[in-house]
Image 1 (cartoon, rainbow, N blue to C red):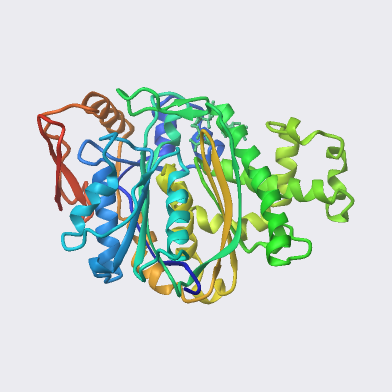
Image 2 (cartoon, rainbow, N blue to C red):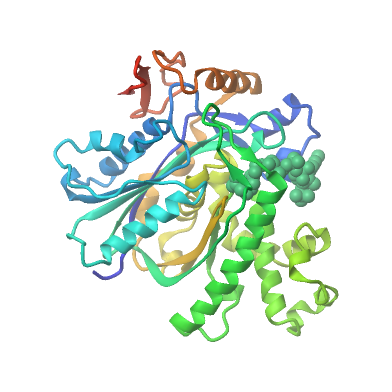
Length: 441
Ligand code: ACO
């Protein structure tokens, strides 16, 4: 098969959100810390009516509907998530209820923090390119409900899910170049199954993320030369860059880091004359170095606005979607930039999942993206949401804490147009044996 890649993208996020400036006031935090310090404007909220099954049911049914794909056309379906409910039983198995006439569908769930969606996507691409491919399409689902205990990490929560249709003759074609960095670290993990909240070392996650950016970027550029014969690739070679976005300020730091790596590879380049004082620093000592950080954010400011910022709309407004976060970026970019302008452009994606797993890879645009932008209708949907107060958000978090892992439970969240977009699946009941049933608005 030729031009294997992404044929369609659909996205779901909850209708409720909390405003980050209001949250600063409510939390008694200096104004600007969440909005400027973290770079977040709103955070998406799920009450007890939504869980990982319901949000994935919604996005897969909407993908099939908006792209008019018959269920028999799907030969593989994979889910990447770190939102766990039935533990031994996959989210994929629940999604099989959407395929009543087709049980011949490979694929299952992948979990490693925010990276599972990328693993699922690479699996799907590998399948289409393999001798086992039967000519059908794959669906990849990346989604999470990201919640933290109250404290500095809480404003970096969020929720959402992205579904992608993968097959040949796609407008978004996978390049041959991929570079990974994987390592054992306890920066973020979920050892306590009685709680939805992770165990997280915030400062360590940030350093791990930036180190993974450095390592995968240098490997990615090397492979651009050895595999694609690009002579001396730099940031200027790359047209758009999408990052896993726990909060968008970290993405600005990550992007600055790419320029810092360009500088390290070519320190005598006159473009970096003003940065000569950083030549003598050991790169491993520069994480958290404010002068380095500021200088390279400054030098990349203009290109950030062009190559990165258009992809941050959903992340700023939904928060961290964990596995979905990077693909919020893809959905946002396609929604922000006209199809003609994207043609033949290289889109680089950086995926990071704590623990840790990271990969930098790229897509080249080889066909129209208009249908994807129309199917997403992203900006109109983001604008049509319902704002809730920080107090209501806190009450929802307390409700989720109390009802996480309970049996014989009837959810109490209201099911109406204020709380749900049309076509959304919601949790109807958890029975005495923890079995969950869903209904659709
Ligand atoms: N106005 C503007 N900016 C402000 C203000 C203010 N009034 N007050 C503080 N800030 C800035 C700080 O200077 C800092 O910016 P900087 O990074 O440029 O220095 C920023 O706001 C954050 O403040 P900190 O005090 O550094 O951090 P905090 O202790 O609040 O925690 C953290 C931030 C670690 C990101 C926390 O939210 C967290 O643990 N989040 C979850 C982990 C995470 O998202 N990790 C990222 C990668 S892994 C993953 O995806 C889960």
